[in-house]
Image 1 (spheres, helix red, strand yellow):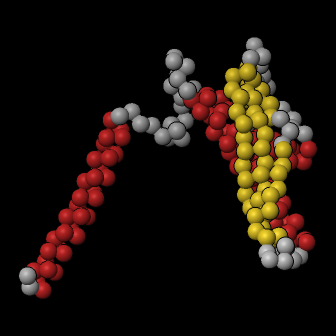
Image 2 (cartoon, one colour; image 1 turned 45 degrees about the vertical axis):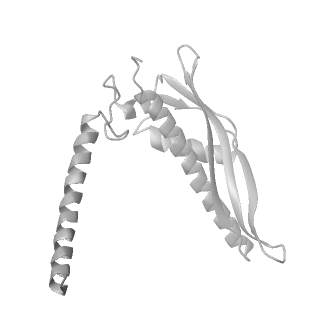
Image 3 (cartoon, one colour; image 1 turned 60 degrees about the vertical axis):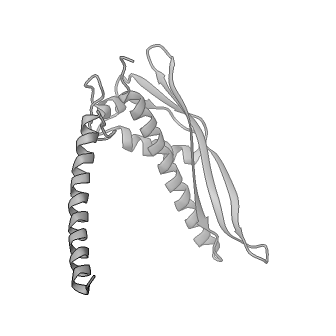
Length: 188
């Protein structure tokens, strides 16, 4: 093969690869649409036509003890309620007190800790207000790490920021679990 033939083959193959990628992308979209695939957040309605956000706004969030619990409750309120809190809610969300654990991740030769992991865990229960029946019960756990710096103030700021991020993740997990429960097909 000559140099020109090699160049021509590479150009043809790159065009075929580009065209093939376009066709494969189009084919995958068609196949996913045909199989009934629906992204969870792609539609704001569940199988019986109810708006998921409207259903979330019908969940009364009970008080959660301690400062972390207040932060988590406020994060859930921000996620669940649009403008107003429910007057006559269908559901109640109970969350057990948050358990915090800290682990040393990085220890130097001189036995100094330079990185820690913060883990928060709790358990949520979604309760029907009319019957008092527990509809959904799930554990929630999230972890993140932070640097232990020379400055005690900087370490405290880093730890508090990490704690807030982990609490936001717990709120996201709770919202996701409840949304999935409310989105489920009630005919099954």
